[in-house]
Amino acid sequence: MANPYRDVFYQHQAEWHKYQSAEDVASRHELRRRYYSWYARNWLPDYKTGEILDIGCGSGQFMYFLRKEGYERLTGLDLDKQQVEIARQLGFEVHEQTALDFLVRSENGYDMIVMLDIIEHFTREELFPLLREVYRKLRTGGRLILSVPNAESPTGPGCVYGDITHETSFTPVSLAEMLFCHGFEVKEMRDPWPAPVDLPRSLYRGLVLVMRKLAGIKYRLLGLEPPRYWSNVVWALAIKPDIREESVTDTPAPGPVMDPDLGTPPVRD
Image (tube, one colour):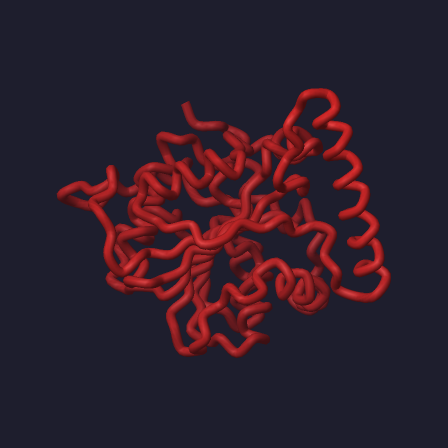
């Protein structure tokens, strides 16, 4: 049985975040820009004319960042009617449609697909056909950027269980395993926090890195292996390689259209 809270919560994200208007949301997106610039540094395509799909785009926060970076061929997907309307008011092309339904029916290919704070909202049984279609719709050499709760982090459980619609979480190893099963090549994973977006936060990041090293020593003295990524969320970049061996997800035909109650959740703040 599908998680019934997904149906309810996905339609009230704008209300939960207390969005007031498109202008209010745009001001919030502007504040997020410098963080996204740090999280996704050196990961975006060099060319600005590629087709980009943001799955679970919410009110368009990452698309707002991408547009400011010069990317214009942007498409978003979300199920929250109010967030979709806000994103459209901000000038984005956003479809109110489930991810699997859209991918199966779409004839477009994409140079980059973005899935931020999304895949943890699906069960493994739901993820398999979804990621198969994501791979199929990426052009050769295309990029997949995603972020997930990091179960390896000391604060990971708070992130995993801090959202009633979460179905799973990942360690960096299990995330790499899942992407490998679909034919993706993982290029890099990142420990995003703290983000050095200004001088005070840069100094804070330096302090945090020192404290993490000291904590790592304590872990080892206790006979434990410290986490490689300490943040409660990990970011990853994967590509669809030019040449690959057949992945385990190869099937004669695309997966079935997803039922409406198994749709793509909006991105959290």
